[in-house]
Length: 146
Image 1 (cartoon, rainbow, N blue to C red):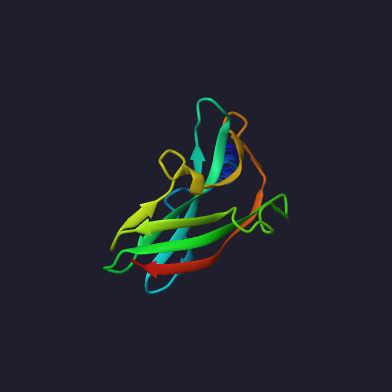
Image 2 (image 1 turned 60 degrees about the horizontal axis):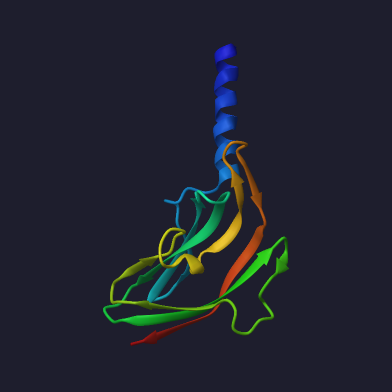
C-alpha cells in the first residue's frame, strides 16, 4: 500500500511541477501554416542571472520555399485579460527576413529576444509560475517574396 501511495505522490508531483513551470520546449505548436511559411510556438524558461527566471513564448519560422521571403505580422498581447497593445498602430509589428528553406528560431538568449512574448515570472525553488499572459495573437500576417 505504501508503495502504491508513493507512486501516486510521485506522479502528482511530476505532473504539477511540469504544468507549473511550463511546457516542454521540444513540443512545438503550429500557429500558422500555408504553402510558403510555417509559424510555430512553444514556451521556454529563461534563466537570467540578473533577474528572476521568466517564461516566454518563443517562435520558430520555417520558409517552405526555395525563395527568400519577408514575413510581417502584428503580435497582440493580453496580460491578465487586457490587451496591452491592440489599439496601437505600430507597436507589436515585426518583419522577419527568411532565406530559402531556412528556419529562424527566436529564443531568450539571441539577437531575436525582442520578438519573444513575456508570459510570467517563475520561481524554481517554489515550483510556481506567476503567469500574467492570458492570450496572444499574430495578426495581419503578410508574406513578400524578395
